[in-house]
Length: 263
Image 1 (tube, helix red, strand yellow):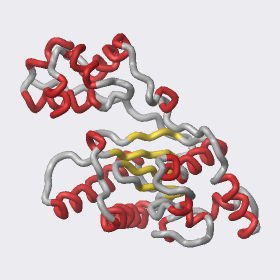
Image 2 (tube, rainbow, N blue to C red; image 1 turned 90 degrees about the vertical axis):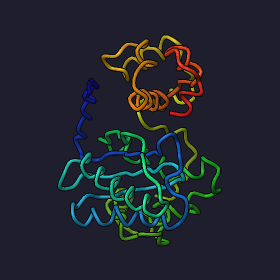
Image 3 (cartoon, one colour; image 1 turned 90 degrees about the horizontal axis):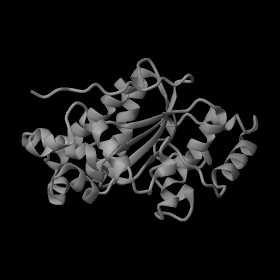
Image 4 (cartoon, rainbow, N blue to C red; image 1 turned 135 degrees about the vertical axis):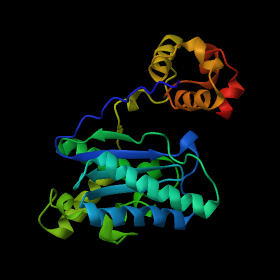
């Protein structure tokens, strides 16, 4: 019998604004070409019209996407599920494939202050530059940056930029210039609660505690004896633990590294 452990409910944002990141399962690519990027943004537009949410920023990378979004007529979790399911149907038809495309649960964080709102917006726009894909933030086609610079961008009509620019000035030209200066500042912006720990390897004790959270009521020794589908599902979740190496997971769970790698 498989015991389902309920996930902890997300804490609601007081402003209704969230920073969302969608990632490919096992870090796989989710956008292979321009058509894929366009289809994803078309999907957001489709539901934006129906549900009246706001999009303040986006950046689409090969294996993940960032959104700065304000909830509309329904809870964000339902909206994101609609977007994910619609895009996955398109992706599976186009590439004649099946199975998981996105990581099981999208990441989100509440954005409840003006200061953090602007930090997230800049963080999203600088994502491609910090990854070394472009030398200037405005050169990445699949972000909302050039829309703020009044140069137009793919899907300009998706972007809710007016209220953001008014935070800088009531004069559009001055607002754009001041926004550009802010948006291109050198910084050490970090987002999501565990961002500061990104890149740091967990100790075995920390790793063991994280793995136990994933396993729920199961104990560490049980994993290798579980049915393959159930075992692989758990191992995929274990692989997603930030700072955990597969070799470390192998030692703690008593399974081979290759078994974790193939899951």
